[in-house]
Image (cartoon, rainbow, N blue to C red; front, side, top):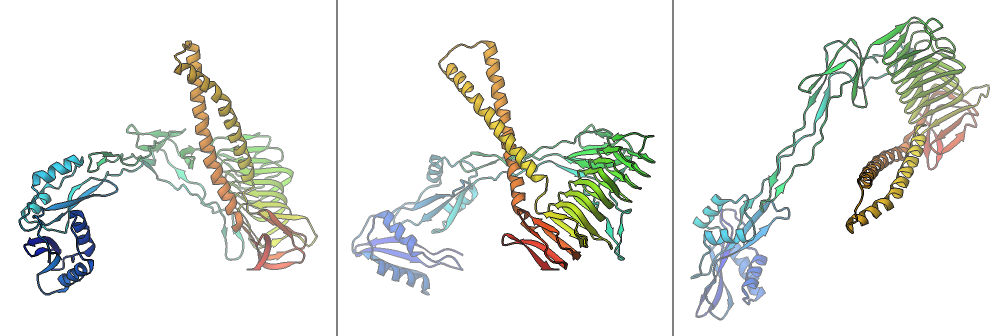
Length: 533
């Protein structure tokens, strides 16, 4: 296969273009390439004659076609080439044009000097160049140099060898009851068990472009296994091992192994309980006592007017009688057979058979969908969904349901906005001092060691403040983005919703004027709308 090409031919009758037809599927002669070549040589031509001649050459059965240019002889034209470098500097190619009959050829040494003059020194295709000069292929791209792309590395990763996504939602049985006992929400571990393995970062290898300029691979992130209580990191820093039997959880990229503290009841015998791991109460938690745990809290009996605070989940098998003073607060989810006259706050979901006259906040969902499944009185707030069988009361108890925004999100946004403003104020206050000191240094003024140390410390503090502002702005952007996505929140009622119930979605609300059944409340067109399930 060979591309079609051309060269000049001149005698006493005039100057001609000899067009040689492509063979075996090669590219045809391009009229634009011909005119560009003739312009480069400063030679006249008649475009219509030239266009007709090139078309004939490409479609004729003859191997060669002679196309007249003008009635004048010229000196033989030498072989030339065009050099093109790719925009990314990773490839250089040349395209040779045949010499006229009697014209001279370019030598390999001349091409090498030209490439060197253009500073093309890396990845030269010497074998391909040699092959061209031995058997030239005209009007054909020849790659003469090619760079090497960098080998991209990989960031370090940590493989956790235990279940890091514990699901604390109860199971809804076929008969409509909720199974609060088989939750599979605790991940046990044994002493000597491997909990995590580190795959170190691969930094990759640099590449080079045709100008021999270094191309660095992308930056990769490093990681390290973090030792906590009851764990050990191996000598090669690649394995994390449990030291004791217990409960393993992943919190903020740290693996915690905690023993589970078990008591019969929480009362005047035990006093208040604070524990680094998980707590299991086999009986009841009595009024005025508190249980605070960094892990999960599980109560097999009843919680009365007590305080429970958990860094994980709270599970109460028989329910919460808050008596107007009881509170539940969990970083993750809360599951209770019923919740009555209590304040409840969960960073995940809240699930119950019934919620009566309580203030309940869940960052994600509140589900009350058992056979009874009612929310009566009080206020319940969820980030994404409230799903209930019966909502409100025939007796007219004030019941408020809010969805659409994580109730804690507004507070976080306000805190970040205030923090960013204070940091920027400190940065602005320090800048005149730094500018003054910089001017003194520029003019050669002498400063005492204490002044130098003060400037250095102030510079470091301002840099730390700037970094903190950048981090806070990124966190604020993410929170505001979540806030804007709150329009998909909804309230689902699988039974009845009674008159007087107020439903708020995001920044709009409605009060139910007539009882409804089997319905869904969504935000649509700036209003709360009811649709059928």
